[in-house]
Image (tube, rainbow, N blue to C red; front, side, top):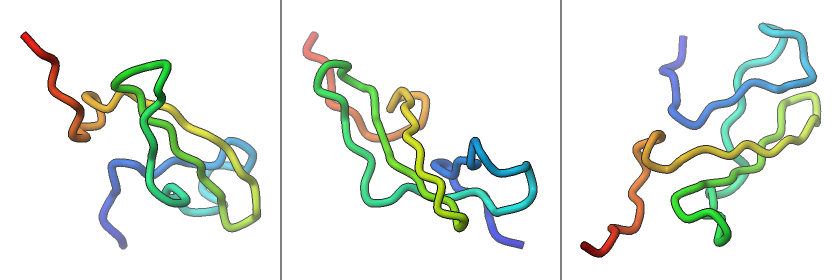
Amino acid sequence: MTAPHDLADCCPECHPGDVPASLPIGEPVEEPERPGCLRAVYECPNGHVWVCWWDSRSAEWPAAREAA
């Protein structure tokens, strides 16, 4: 059994449990229009590709500090 990964995501097209959760292809990038929002591209072993977004603070990724 492998350890869970914070950025793993399940394919939205495959039946749950048919393929393992996928990790991002490349590094997640910050959305310029949405500060603090990260975007990553995923691909499952069956070749399905999808995009996932999340709030960097919720994912505990280092985010730029806001000036006080």
